[in-house]
Image (cartoon, rainbow, N blue to C red; front, side, top):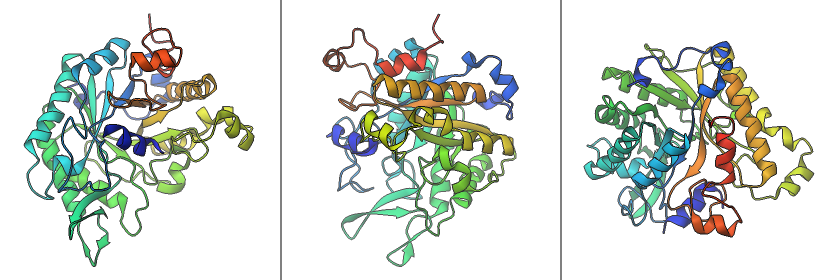
Length: 372
């Protein structure tokens, strides 16, 4: 199972006023400890079953969860004060082009409110892969934005722009918002133009006078190792405020998926340079950001608790610090259970793994050098 399928099975205003300058390695390299490290708080995107659609989105706290204030407080106490919150488009807007679902919006707003209470900031992340699952003729169909489905376009860039216009209306004055994460991991776009789609969403947000930062993911699963190869040499979003950052994701297993299906030994047999992946897989993304003089963000990265994988992640973190890039670890969440990348405190699982204390080894690596 990959990281998405594991979650599905287990489920049964500083940023708005110039926090991020234009690209400047020198400005951040001098004091990398000031760069924030955060975590994805998962659960609101979970409960994805074969029958999932806008007409059957699941039930809150039965099929999916926004977690509790205790989780927010725990990570705030640990020093991770930046949260990326994945949620599903179909749940917050079950009818395209119509009003947001108010109960679902309140759940998202409650999460953001907890973050504000504990001095944290939030990235809103639409976890839909540039798709929307519609019920068509009684069956769920994944509909790619701007693509033909049964002879006509079911989900358009205007629908996507409308979603973000309404989310902007709901969160424009929320001081705990760090950024709007337009879409998680667009991929296999076919004839659909992700650059035009993302530009339209940015235009819709700015049309409302919203000055929040906007994180624009790369196509091709936002893969940092191939960011320029997939997305071309030029940054593509035109923003009159210049408040756009580009988002990449980075996992260190052989197929970049984050599933870690092979053992470390098996990975090493395939690639004797495995230990260099931590920094190497970020280089193309970093070089692209520098060439375009734009900001970047690493929305996802994560490893199992094996100390050898941890060393690779720590090399990734050092590379991020040197480049002045912040990022969020994948993942935490109260329903993750035995998910091997989880840093959610789970006393029973910690004891099973022979860990003395309440912190996963990945969390210790995330916090290395940042605690007094």
